[in-house]
Figure (tube, rainbow over the protein chains, first blue to last red):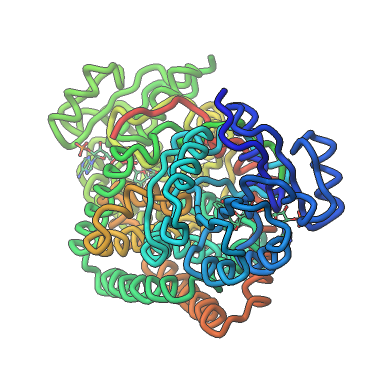
Length: 309
Length: 309
Ligand SMILES: NC(=O)c1ccc[n+]([C@@H]2O[C@H](COP(=O)([O-])OP(=O)(O)OC[C@H]3O[C@@H](n4cnc5c(N)ncnc54)[C@H](OP(=O)(O)O)[C@@H]3O)[C@@H](O)[C@H]2O)c1
Ligand SMILES: NC(=O)c1ccc[n+]([C@@H]2O[C@H](COP(=O)([O-])OP(=O)(O)OC[C@H]3O[C@@H](n4cnc5c(N)ncnc54)[C@H](OP(=O)(O)O)[C@@H]3O)[C@@H](O)[C@H]2O)c1
């Protein structure tokens, strides 16, 4: 139980923020946590389940006297939220965010912040396909990465403090520059999500042909895609619109490779297919060795079973 | 404990066959189970772990006196195996298979079988990314579908018996024609696998650029793809080469949709993206309601944790 910030404000009260709240409580990282979400419904629900010590009716109220402000809203509204809270920030406050894209968030948020504040963009590499105030759980960040972008803030002590805070939530923290972050995440997360959305969309078209059998017999492979493609539409719209370049570049490469594999199928080139699949199998091993997944049937998600939908 | 067949022969001793064996033992479905695999290594391993009552050194020995012969080998070698065992089949034996493709297997196997035998092609919709004799577990088929193709066999009593056998293994059995099977599975399994293989291949190329960070920070989305893309190369080569038409047709549609989404990203058409992602989210709900997946973090795989790789 080491308190790291006296007062923390969470702006946005969905999966990421609620998991941070329960994680802060678990480790005693904050004296008091205030929160704000856009809709009355979410604020009401947060009060019902004890999410935040105080749920405020405006973002400006929530950030009052906060030592750390965490922007937990979709990437596309980070700038507007920053503009709204900026005049109300405590002297020397640290602002961070959890957005899945970094360069665009820095471009949108930085201009609004006062000089006395310190902006340290962040991105915890942890999530589920669920969203909203009920989706969070304290274990979400355990043993996951949290990437921090250090070059917007000139105070190394604050970067250290935020690092300790995320470590207190269970994460392993690394620093990275924003452009590089967006490329790496484009490969490991953004492009795969778009591809899963596309495949599920294709199946939906075909469902009309095959009479819901696609759902009935949905097998491994597709089942995993549907889970990915169940992720929050607003969050993902904003991710793609704000990481355009990297996403499109990777999708371009993807299409090239897919065409090569399609040609191998068409021409019956079994050796090419076998070699390709052998190579991709080895990558899985790398990931398991890197500790980013386990071989257990819950795929390393651990944490509390979330029973909704 | 209802014995359904006196003697069952498993040809091929990998994930599917070994799960069938443990499932037969759990439910007492067979008097004796013989087995054969191509390599000495696999046969040795099978003997070590008690997989099959008798492990034979040839397929012809294994099928001797068998009332049910199950072909559990890759789709591409079903024909050759059928040719080898055909002269040694017991009078009136039932032959089935578990191949992921049905029309090509029927084309390859049927011509070799003697008139007195009865061929009932099958496909259990259950699997993991693991393969080999150690990969199986009795629960694999619990509450999963097994599709049977009934029109190669003129004896309805044998179709009933095989249905009861699969039900004894825990599965829900339905009948379907072979072409329709190949289209439905093309959508729900074959195309998704090819796409996952492709995406992981792209990441592998980029890894050289980004220095193994793709593995280190592999996030949700990509992690699931790598698991799919860790599936057995031989099995999947054979699936694609033997379900060419449906796979290529679905990939054609996939590419069209992907281009539409890429254009929406490029032009900043957020409404199109949001609508698309909202539609795919609804499909997930259908699948959970259809009982083909759960919302628990093991994604309905249940069964015994498989700890290898
Ligand atoms: N989900 C993941 O897997 C994941 C992983 C890492 C990072 N992230 C990032 O984390 C951030 C939040 O994601 P999440 O999964 O927690 O989303 P979420 O569960 O959908 O929650 C989003 C929250 O933002 C609020 N919000 C939306 N627009 C707002 C606005 N204009 N002003 C104030 N509040 C607003 C929502 O309020 P209402 O409920 O009232 O609408 C909601 O409380 C996103 O930037 C996302 O990129 C997500
Ligand atoms: N894995 C899945 O998710 C899944 C799901 C449903 C259906 N299926 C189908 O089930 C079948 C088997 O798949 P699996 O996952 O069990 O594969 P697996 O674990 O790789 O096992 C394949 C078995 O076939 C044997 N084999 C290969 N070539 C042979 C030959 N020419 N003669 C005799 N035996 C041979 C192998 O012997 P060695 O070990 O000696 O090489 C091995 O025992 C495939 O047709 C596949 O399409 C798979």
